[in-house]
Length: 338
Image (cartoon, rainbow, N blue to C red):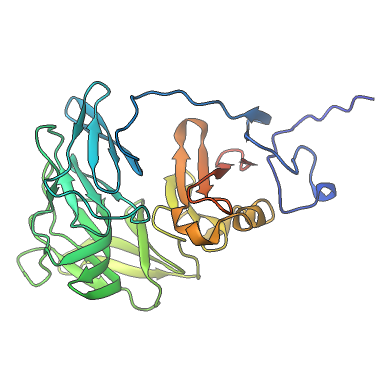
């Protein structure tokens, strides 16, 4: 007898037993995605650029004028590739971070900003003849775990000042004009917008920040804050977001049309600016956290695939020192694949 199942695109559910699943849901899959009511296999890989000369741990797209670059970085060196020519843009002294010192940054007014938390934050204007340079006005004795652009400012989180770590500190630059970086980070200069604020209501450390509308959401390990522009004299308004949800580690959240998808210390959640809800509980939550290598959890990361409306929760499985598996959530169908 042949039984027709009208909808096999309900996704995988590892958390329930097979007899508890709804029609169209799967108890186990490998290399399958679910969209538009269908189960589909993930496609293979095709090489686009020539092999890198270093082990790359960071990749981002950067456009300036008529030039388009893929920026990739190892722990020590950074390269800009326009599809034809690959140029090293490392400063004279190579960078000193390790594999777990994750690169981050963004683009502020057409200028690329990069930071690894170990060396001083860097910027690059897009001219291959120039190298990365230290941010203007940045104190050489400071380090920041995170530096991100927001509106006309750069925002730094989790600050090390000489030998003292301020894990709850948010520090922001003076405002920048388009095409340039901020000229000052001096919070004591009353002629500048620069300042700093300790978010010490919760004792956990700041780990990352993601924009959401007119606010920058600051993620700590077990809590969240919003940072909204209000102008002089205070520049920003900081507000604690209710709940005890945070981010597992730097790079464990992305912005999607549905809101922020965030890998926390025990769940995968969606934050839309009003509420935080689990999108993994009762589906793949136990699967993900039962299979993350505990010694290498800091290597987990979250990335989005806009073409297929997907978010990939990438993590190292037991015994792995790099990410080897991804749980994949489709923000339109709400289904999970692997």
